[in-house]
Image 1 (cartoon, rainbow, N blue to C red):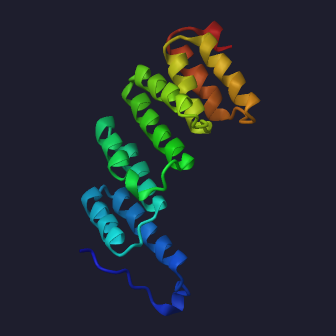
Image 2 (image 1 turned 90 degrees about the vertical axis):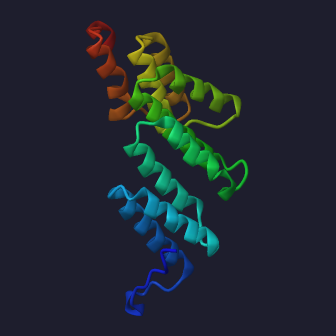
Length: 184
């Protein structure tokens, strides 16, 4: 067991929300230094003390998926902790799909990105900006320019305006594939 965090009472952090903030900070710091086992032990301690929040798990998942190229491990981490979330919590689902899709994109598995996107849509989970950008990038990287542009249009119709990342998601893969005219 890790033990409890102790801060001086002069910090003014006495309520339960601030206790969670402190635990979340600890998890983030541990993961920054790739101490995943220690962070996992802290999460288990939080669970035992009924202090575990979905945000604590999301911090761990986000850091874990950012560091590891092994998407299967990231998927396992997400779904083995699914019971800690409210059932059908759409924000968790969007976040989990986004994390998994970004891992697959990083690993170059474009088919898996698209498979997860269509699975999300079938479950009626509304994609967010990160999901759209990952799928646009996957389409562009696979030289499916028409599909990438169509998805950009769909994204705009949903009220999610393109940002620099969106534009780079389509332009960079096309330029790398020497499809400069398509990138325009």
